[in-house]
Length: 211
Image 1 (cartoon, rainbow, N blue to C red):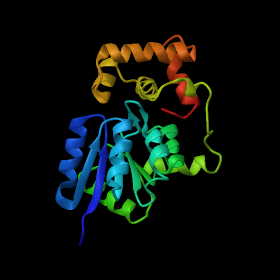
Image 2 (image 1 turned 60 degrees about the vertical axis):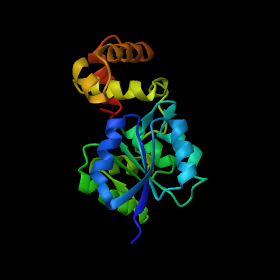
Image 3 (image 1 turned 30 degrees about the vertical axis):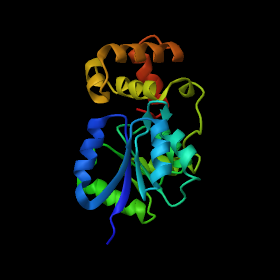
Image 4 (image 1 turned 135 degrees about the vertical axis):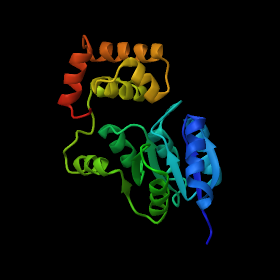
């Protein structure tokens, strides 16, 4: 049986290497990309069966890739693979045309199974994320939030982790950033949301169900 063809899109080379190793010889990796422009070029050139797509990328985000590619490669299925489990990220890529969304806590065998199911036309979501999609299409999640829309995708990631009680050092380790970069993002988040400290930020995020 012919192996499924897959393109890996993630801005961290080590993550791509890890995914490649986990999938092994069960699929054929026909391309990799680390940013939006490269992803669009590789996907349109290779027309893979499945794209494993990170949500936050240099030059934009996963939705930008979807907007540029979905109509051009109608036989390609997109599966979001991200550290983020935020409702707005899940809903954005699904609205953009992704057939599923799993987090990077997924095991290798589970990821391979998800790739195969996506290729067969199924929709695949990590358990708690499926509810976000259901809420979005039944009116349970607002399509937009003016305050949240002020934040960049990376600022949203940092905001969620800080609101959950992570230290700056823990956020830096989780997102593979420097502590100074995390501090810069937190300052920008507080300024844009007109909040004074992380305690107010936690209350703000809790009220929107985005922690």
